[in-house]
Image (cartoon, rainbow, N blue to C red; front, side):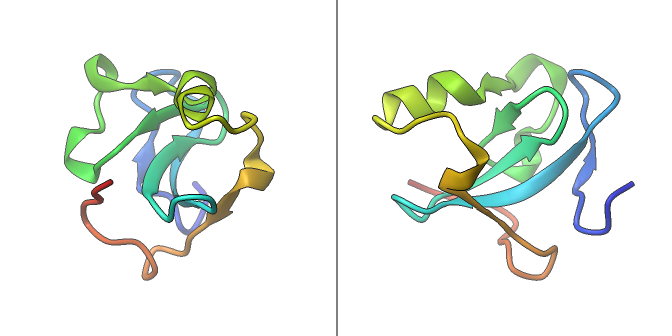
Length: 83
């Protein structure tokens, strides 16, 4: 598993859930590097609560590109995020 991964993705079972910051609004999200499932807090990471990265970014008026994110190290992210 990737060093800064929070856990294995509960949606696809193949990717790693990584902490990332949306550059435009500074919000920390948790994103699977395989299926692009997204969560908004560490405590909510489970299959039933995932969101689609492309829909989330669309709601922000941003393209659904990883270049719109800053992938964080494990020490850079907070246990929860708001925003």
